[in-house]
Image: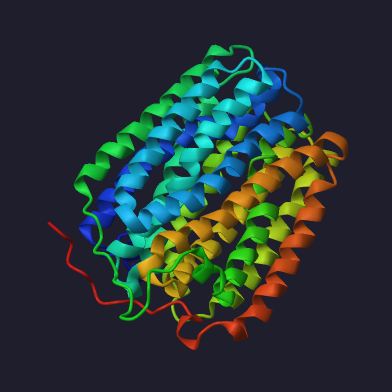
Amino acid sequence: MRLLRSYLRTLNPPLPGSVRTLQAGALVNALGNGLAYPFLFIYLHNVRGIDLATAGLIVGANSAVGLVAGPIIGSLIDKIGGRITLAFSLWMLAVGFGGYAFVDSPWQGFLASAIAGIGNGGFWPSQSSLIAGLTPTAQRHQAFAMQRVMMNLGIGLGGLAGGLIATTTNPASFTVLFLADASTFLVYSAFLLRVPAPARTPRPEGRERGGYGEVVRNRVFMAVVALNFVFIGAGMAQLETLPVYAKNEAGISERGIGVLFFLNTLVIVLAQLPMARVLEGHRRMRTLAVLGVVWAAGLLIVPVAGIAADGWTAAMLLALTFAIIAVGECLHGTVQAPLVADLADHSLIGRYMAASAFSWGVGFALGPAVGGFVLNHWPHALWPAAAAVCLAAGGAALALERSLPIGVRTTPRRAQPVLAEG
């Protein structure tokens, strides 16, 4: 009973009220993303008849455009604040994802993806800058863990609902999904009216306001960013290619795919905050090394489901993959964003968060694009190749540890409670 009470306490960390409001909006928005995003590959290929390689490029174009937009919006964050740039990003995402509903040919898919990419480029650095600015240093791992929980809870519930709605025999069902997703971006922007702008961090006296050159010269930070790109591209981004493989190679229905994403989310929701608590005081780079092993194990199960199994057996194997990948996401969620915030000069927080988001964008641009190409030619080869890259990234994390400042090498231990605002 004591263990249960301790577990339940981890699910409600004492975060500032402004952070809770922000994350409530993110939950609503993530619900819409879950409705539509897991089925985007299937929609483009199986409903609109776009070949897998081109569909992969369309999906990847979102992140590719975000790579250009992100650094520009990162500079704006340092000038006008993350709250305004996050609202703008949400409006662009609403237009882009709503536009997918009207795609009939590849060029329209690329246009919708490009508009969404502008919003995507600003979304992550803006939101992350707000969380970092509104949360005390010792609680950032809890705040970013809670963010991961809220977004995955919404995506999982949305994916479950989307699996019940979407069917390739009725293209209009996908129109419903994309328009509903667009509306949730607008709802999230309304939540921002109740979130204050964080106080600006002044530049040290005698130093002029820096630009991206100062960020790039922070070699340790850039190494962390590069490592994150590898993890995202080989690991998390392949969740975007898994649905079409599951349907076409393992015979999993749209409803079954929705259940798999819900399972992934359920594990994250139940395990992310307790894992953040357990990892307090533990070495961050060792955690990332374990992440490489965990994701490699999950990815190696996928071709077994596609080659040697069918029916319920294939479904159970893929369910195991989604659960294992979720455990890795919890490890990653405890370390990556708080480490970036700890390494950043907070007078340039927008640029630092934009540089971090850039690594996500490159990973999500190249991951589906390369994955779609491999799936189109050698569908069973993608998974062991991605697993090998994840293992190599885990080894690189251990090698990087000595370069980190001593004060950021471990996840902070539990902080004293902070009274909620207002």
